[in-house]
Image (cartoon, rainbow, N blue to C red; front, side):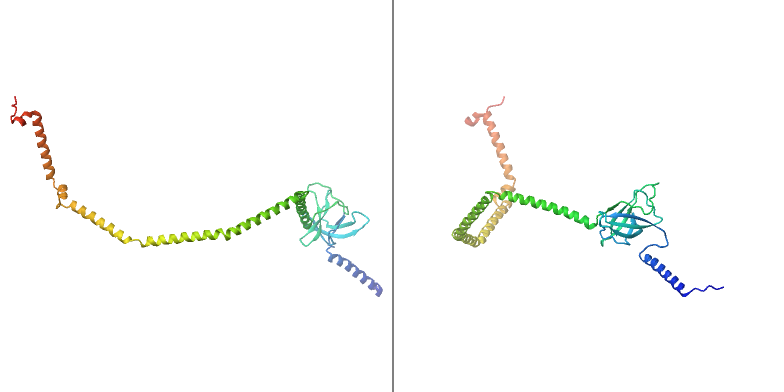
Length: 299
């Protein structure tokens, strides 16, 4: 016995299959793992900062799911409710929280599930609501540091302006302007004196310097014209005479040379001295012999 299926039933079954494929295909294209069970958790935020659905969900930097949906109710302070879907093998213990964090340098946002460290922590049931927080982006941190720098610069500028205003209050500005006028007047007088000096005194000094230079040139010319050659010739002649005198003294031909080189004069003088000494001894011993021509007999 064959069962006949009407055309209407076939069309209905085909439409149901198409709807099934469309639903799961759409969820698959959205990134939902339709073959593995998931756990959902939610959190409330005041602002989204650019968070969108299908944004990644991380646990300690590891992707464990994605943002399933974002709903909002602007009558509440925490207007946005974010539902995240996590893989079923991810255990979310009690004390966990949900944090909105920047994702990359292009300004994208992601969700991070902050899991506390420790063992034997009770697991949160699915669909639980987690406390939330927001991590500042790099732009926010730069804004904070820049604002701090700008505030510091503005404070310095305010102090400078206050000091200037304090200096310019009352009669101080008049005194400053009066001192400036006096300085300008003094500079004018000094400039006039310098101009007179350049016109009158400097030319006289320059003429005197030119005269001194002329005298120096004349003195140099006279020194260059001096008879240096005659002086040199006279010195050479004197040296030649001295050399001739030395040669004559060294020679045995002259009297001085004979006196220096012949020792007979020494012997003669020595003999004469001995004779004179003997004569003086005789005179001391027998003075009468020189007067009477007699010698005293020796006993």
